[in-house]
Picture 1 (cartoon, one colour):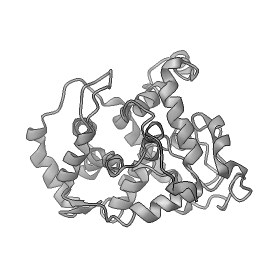
Picture 2 (cartoon, rainbow, N blue to C red; picture 1 turned 180 degrees about the horizontal axis):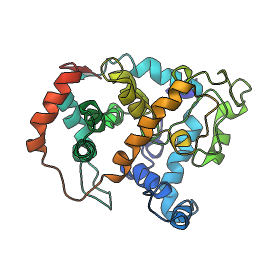
Picture 3 (spheres, one colour; picture 1 turned 120 degrees about the horizontal axis):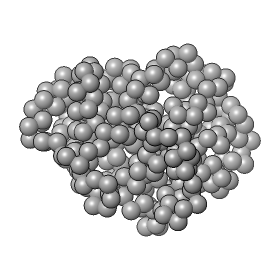
Length: 293
């Protein structure tokens, strides 16, 4: 199985920063009031400035096979890498400070606080606020040595045909599953409208954090965490044939969350010391004192 290969430095870190992927998502899906013509212009992937993003997705689409995902699930979902309180995990995540974001000079914790504070300002339930605060915590995978393309990126089902609505679909021709008759049909190993609970998603911070929090948070929060990078579905409806009615109901929450994640960045940093007591109380309400990562 190829999942245990040693990756080169370029294969581990094709992006200048993890946030480069999020900036690309913003260009593909600008704020709703942006004119349609401008949105179409953003989808020009031949621009040389996108070379690192193209390389990122070339690797992502090549290596995110069904067997790779199952291997990562078996490894990381044992949660035996490290133990720490949630705020300590946030500070650990903060060692992924992005020095190259051209739009904003914020660390990981500040971005999460901006997301959650925007949710709180709109009067949503406290579990929704906590979801905004936690949603990128799964990026700690990078600190465990995982390559960027196995941490961030648009997510998609594995074990069935890849939709042409996924960004850079042409790169799936390098994926062994593309030629595997078990995986390359519309439904692959799944049944029509089987429900996403029965579907394996590409591996990354979304899936990891979902499993980390699934025993503690309300179901709408878990859908937000697990599928907030599943743009092929919540923006393009490309996998309706796998969703059941419950998924369709829950995806209303995913779509409600997405604008807070994408559009809440501001150059004014939140006051972390001032906000910390509120979030520590909120964490204590829903999560155990120590997380096993």
